[in-house]
Length: 273
Ligand code: ATR
Image (tube, rainbow, N blue to C red; front, side, top):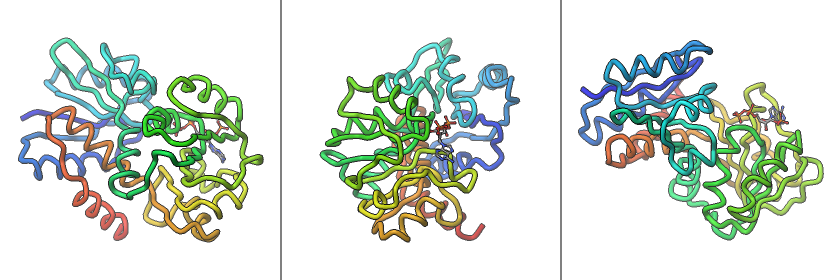
């Protein structure tokens, strides 16, 4: 049977084995998908061993996505733009790298949540790896403008410069943000520490939609604040997780699984955890 795995450190918490097993059942594909914790200094080695044992492909999560890009012998355009890879496909001698995170975010927003991105004013918080993967995919939707806000403004400015050819993108600090956005996306890792990105409350209060790439059993601190300030519609990143997995499954198996039942099952698991 074809085998796949997700590599991370840590990886025990990963929902990818559950998601891909559900996709395989649903589409009648015979495959095995496991989670492999690679040592921090041993990612490439672990992947090559897996491939030597007959592995067909892999997902890659924190902290190995940039290393996975360097390991790939060929890469998709979106992986090149992100300089990071979350999906590997082993094809004979080739190690093909793709990045499905941005597509997963856009699909969750537009298809699952019905948020129009074309012509909209988008505020993206953060300038790390998570933001980087999202920027090209968001710009491809032709928003009216995309603003990158980051605590370290220079990092946002560097990204705006790098992706400037793809669309209307600019950089800002948090304190000078004006309350004129249709969608605010949190791509900072602040929630990991139970923290909030320090943006003016008026920005969230005026936004019709807030999205957090993080998720958890309870509402994330960012979404809880948005709700308190009157932001009517909010969503966490569980849908993005399932959609990026569906894109990877499509790359490996040539069929796109239905994501709704898997997302519903995951949400139920989270709530009963
Ligand atoms: P990731 O790959 O998850 O994006 P990263 O590359 O370490 O992780 O980037 C983390 C992002 O979250 C950065 O934009 C960081 O801001 P800085 O560039 O100023 O460091 C942001 N971040 C982390 N903790 C934060 C906090 N408490 N408040 C605001 N931004 C925070």
